[in-house]
Length: 142
Image (cartoon, rainbow, N blue to C red):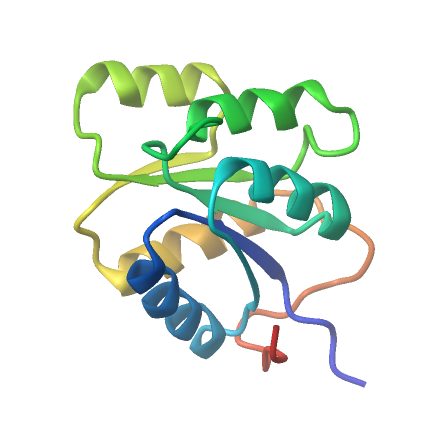
């Protein structure tokens, strides 16, 4: 029996970007879930306990920084790897993200292959949870 694909939760308020990311992540072997704002992202993170979260910063409240802090403060979600994918390019935003223990900070526009490679790298550095995940598995529909 094939291992379950790793789950990724995408949190962004831009619908067209979510569609693009969903397709790319599924092709890369992830099971993909989406949230259209920070509040939905928090609910999804608690319900799904994804293997990794990819989140925008600039969203209606709670923004990405606030969402990261809420998840970090919760013992159930604090260890889920968190990657910012944002249009913010200022050094202060990147410093804040890394101080908040984000696992990576990727700026838009981004290269899809680079994004996927960086997500796999974050997952490889993390101890395996619940089940072993194989890179490149087939993702289900979500």
